[in-house]
Image (cartoon, rainbow, N blue to C red; front, side, top):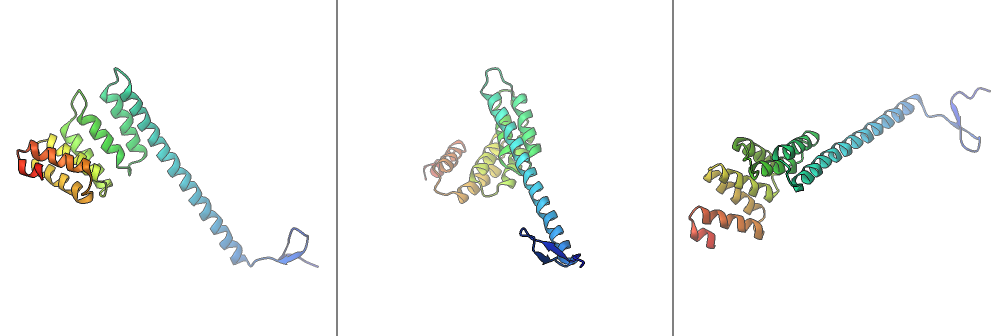
Length: 178
C-alpha cells in the first residue's frame, strides 16, 4: 500500500498528512515568525550599540582632559544607531550647549527641537528646549517651551523651578513668585 498522504507520529502510527495548502500556510507562518525574530534581534542590537556609544560619551566626559568634540562624536554615533530615541539628540544638544568651547547655536536648537519632537510627552525635553531657546535669545519661544513642559507635568518642582528662574531672568518678578 502507498502511504504518500500520510505521516508517522512518534509511535509509528500513520496519520493523514495535511493538505498542500495547509503545508504552504505553515511554511509562510514559519517564515513570518523567523522574520519577526530577526527584526527583534536587529532592534536589540541597534539599541545596545547606541547605549554603548552613550556610555563611551559619559565615560569620556568624566575623564580629565576630555574634549567636547570627542563626546559629540560618541553621541552622534548613538544617534545613528538609534535615531528614534529622543535622549540622544537631547544629550548631544546639552553637551554642545554647556561645553567650554561653546556649541553652535543653530546645531543646539536643531538637536533640542528634534529631541522634543521625538519625545513630545517628556517634559524634561521641553525644559531643555526652553533653555536652548533662552540661550539663543529667543525669549518668546523659550516661554512657550517652558509653558509646554509645565502643562505636561504641572506638579514637578524641577519644572516649576526652571520656569520661575526663567521669569526672574526675564524681569517678571510677579510670575516668578507665583
